[in-house]
Length: 389
Ligand code: 13P
Image (cartoon, rainbow, N blue to C red):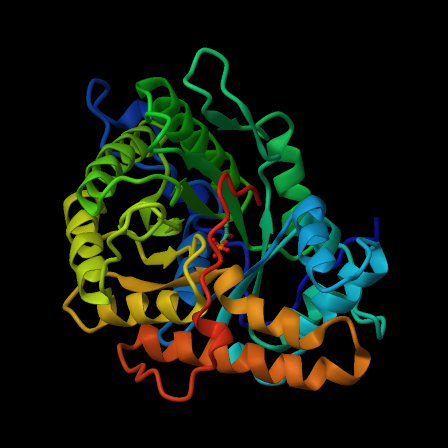
């Protein structure tokens, strides 16, 4: 691993010093009912980081595919899954000129957080110079949940505090933990509780170590169910998530959410219009998400690039109480990766395509996307059954 880089850039919030005073003293608080929230030494820095990521007209580039998933991406363009190929691809992404105009945060896999570009600059430094906050995937992936109906749970709490502290030293300022909920397999009460509890423990640990936690219980697109069923499951899942976030004293102003949009299952014959997706999704947000939360950064989940942009735009054309934005992987990278095809001479064209998608989603964050000039490729769906990341 490379040596630690301590970021000096002024746009990254510094560790605050007020918090020792702000930390509630148990002796001075009413004992039975405590309305206090976590206000550890990073509290105001967490709030600042979350606001920076949730800034108008910007969203997150999720480029934290695990090595296994990145291997599938590279295989799709005929490349081997080597560190050099992963480095070349990620260099292309982070050094797209002017990316920071549309992208406020980039989620990295651990390898990338400690990696340099092909020109030898630290990837973290390149992001900071683009005014993009570096983030880190901290979960250790999904495994079968014993005692459930073929559902999964997400590993990674063991040793998380020390890993999170090291990631902060390396320049990360936010984190991601992705767990999944399957509608066709239940979801069982056990799977929902496990997902919500794991997310809440992770969020508390991340905040204690200066990282804004992205809370992501992905409700998978798999299934034949209609949009009403997705809505009902979303309400259930997010009620439990917030219950346990509160129990773990997580500071709501210092988190970001990464929900799935409310859509019909991928195998349902009926497709929802962007207006329907916006209506259902905003209704679920209004019923479950406290206004203290600074940003809702949706995942794309297998929607086509254009669909994900249209749905985001429709949400931002209606009144809503949050910064409603994107944290897309596939819906930002798909045509970029294909355009690159592993050839150095295509790097500029691929970066241009990435910037087109980033700009389209930036406009959608502002409710100003018109859909003009989109390629046929960007309209192709990317749904994969039982998708892992
Ligand atoms: P997709 O946008 O491809 O669903 O991925 C986002 C992500 O980060 C999943 O955790």
